[in-house]
Each structure stands twice: as C-alpha cells, then as structure tokens.
Length: 397
Ligand SMILES: Cc1cc2nc3c(=O)[nH]c(=O)nc-3n(C[C@H](O)[C@H](O)[C@H](O)COP(=O)(O)OP(=O)(O)OC[C@H]3O[C@@H](n4cnc5c(N)ncnc54)[C@H](O)[C@@H]3O)c2cc1C
Image 1 (tube, protein in one colour):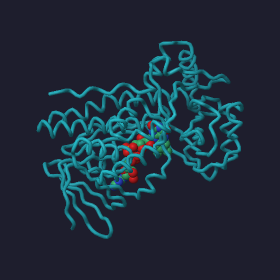
Image 2 (cartoon, rainbow, N blue to C red):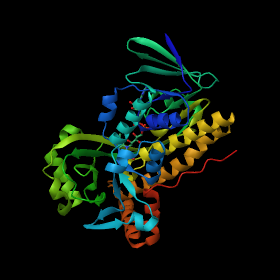
Image 3 (tube, rainbow, N blue to C red):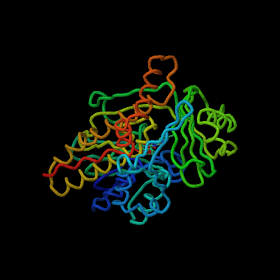
Image 4 (cartoon, rainbow, N blue to C red):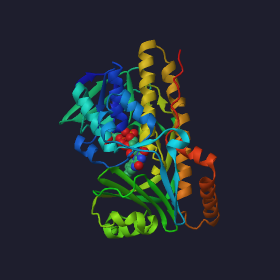
C-alpha cells in the first residue's frame, strides 16, 4: 500500500472539487484530488452554463477568470414566453447585476489547467475510493490506481463527488436528514453548432410543456424541452426535437435552428434535494454531493461555487486561528444560501412546466405569471434571485 499525506483530501474533480483545490492552493493549503473518471470524460460532460456575478467574482479571486472575461457573454436580461407573448425581465436595470454565459466545461478546463500549472496532485481514474475515520481526528482515504492500493492521511476530507458519490453515502442514515422532491418530468437537452438567433435566454411556458432557448457561445446553442420520465433519447430524432421546440417556443424564434444537427443529446430528471448537516466530524460535503436543484433557476453550479468558497474560508481560518469555530459555521452558513436557491429553483420550475391533471395549479401558474409581468416588485424579486443572492460574510473571531 502506497501511503501519502495531504492537509485536505478532496473527492471529485467536478467544478466543486477543482475550485476548492485552487482556492486552497492560493491560501497555502495542500490538497489532493481523487477523481473516479478520466480528465477527458469529465471535460466531455455537457452541463450548466449560466454564472452568477458572485461566481464570476470567486473565479477571479481564484485566478482563473481570464478566458471567462474574454469569451463569456454578459446577459442583462432574460425572457419568459407565455400564451404567445414574450416578456423581458431586465435584470441589470432592476437590480444592477447581470449573469454571464460560460459553459461549465470551459470553467472546468480553466481550473484543470490552473491545477496542472501549479503542480498540485490530482489522481484521475481513482477506483474504489473509500473514506475512513472521518468521525475521529485522523481521517484517511483509500483508493486503487494503476493496479495498486493507495492510502492518503489527511486533516480533512471534502466530499465534492456529486449526487451519486461515495462521500455522503459513507455517513450512516441516522446521522443525516434528507429533504427531497421529485418532479414528474425531465429535460431533454440538445447541443448544436449554430449561431444563437436569440441574444438572451428564453424560458417558454406553453400548453405543450416547457422549453428553454439557451446558448453556450456565439456559435453554439443549448436548447431543452420538458419530456416524460419514460422517454429515451433514441426516441427523439433531431427532427422531432426541433419540431417540438418550435411549437413550444414559437416559430419566429425557432426557425433559424430547426435544421441544426445535434452534437449532444441527453435527458436529465428534475429533482430538489438537500442533506443536513453538511459537516460530519472531519468530513465536509459541498456541491451536488449535498444538494440538487432542478436546473430551471440555473443554480446548481453556482451553489457548488458558494459552498466551496465558504469551505475554503472555513479551512483557511481554522489553520490560521487553530480553533473549531470556522468549521462549525460551515454547515449553517451554506444551508442558509442553499435553501434560498432551492426555493427559487422550485418556484421557477412550478411556474414554467406543465403539471398534467392539476387544473388548480394551472390557474395559479397563470396568475403568478400575470402578476410577474405586471408587477415591478415581483420582477425585482425574480431578478434578485436569478442573478444570485449575495454571499454571507464569514463571522470573524
Ligand atoms: C444534464 C445536467 C444539466 C445541468 N444544467 C445546469 C444548468 O443549466 N445550470 C446550473 O447551474 N446547473 C446545471 N446542472 C447542475 C450542475 O452541472 C451541477 O450542479 C454541478 O456540476 C455541480 O458540481 P459538483 O462538482 O458539485 O458535482 P459534479 O459536477 O457532479 O462532480 C462530481 C465529480 O465527482 C466524481 N465522483 C463521483 N463519485 C466518485 C467517487 N466515488 N470517487 C471519486 N470521484 C467521484 C464525478 O465523476 C464527478 O467528476 C446540470 C446538471 C446536469 C446533470
């Protein structure tokens, strides 16, 4: 068994794990990242693309925002389509902030390159990762790599290994409380190399179900339609997808992309989920390992960023002060922001999707949307949440 030591063992090299590694490196704290997949596989996953201002600020602080500023697209509003009309929520003029469109894949690539440049250790294709003694004072992580067994001694373990990872699952059920909601539909997403004919995201509530016109760059669109949980990707040819998108989005928007061949197509279920607490002895959960939001509010990636920002502050202050206080604050501090993002994502999902067979919900949905389009206060509230609520200040000793 090959034995090494680090201060923080990070499980998972998604955005949460890589960003935590980068923030800790800049704070002078040593970390090793263990990732089950290869680097190429991680970079091939098509996921989020809308960054809050707070996320951009953290990436700047982490020293990985140069390409983001050069290539990211700043959006000062979003549109909502309903009953044949489009209504703009003017984010910037309402709350003074905008969002930036920059693919999660690009952000991941920037973080991987920064990590390689500083020589920090990342083990890709680490198999059978297992967490030990996290409830005591000497945690360890074991794994298999290159046909050999390895063990890392550490001060802390950061579980950044997503919803299906090993970190949360290592904590006995009786020590954690889970809150969840499954939605009766999924999102079918298509990526296509075609210049977006829309300049801002358009969320459409139509009688046939939800659709979203989004983008990843000036030459690439990302579009979604609400679909059944029983649907398989093979049932959705490109022609069927674009036809459905066009019917839901309206032809004046959809016409320009309806001939585009897809370069990626996938179905994701929609779920709300939170585990409490986020700290178990010397194990800390962050990102999708701790919570899931339906993607309607574009909050999943952004929440992962605020979690690891709080976690790096807690670890930094702990090493400086030599006290438990910053570590004790981590979970309640994160959960305050997580629940607000859960509420907003749930609200957006409720207002924009078709919930079959619920006539009362349909009337309430129409009433909510009419109120939103007519009320400055309601638009302000949506804008304030969409651009991202401010981070909590860390309590100082
Ligand atoms: C299809 C899809 C679309 C999405 N769209 C949006 C969107 O539009 N907007 C938005 O804000 N969010 C979106 N999200 C959510 C967003 O992508 C996630 O919130 C974000 O990836 C969370 O980052 P993370 O690092 O916490 O988790 P992940 O990105 O899941 O990374 C976890 C990492 O841990 C690794 N891992 C897992 N198990 C182990 C193990 N046992 N050992 C070692 N490594 C392990 C995984 O391979 C992975 O690399 C979407 C998610 C999906 C799936």
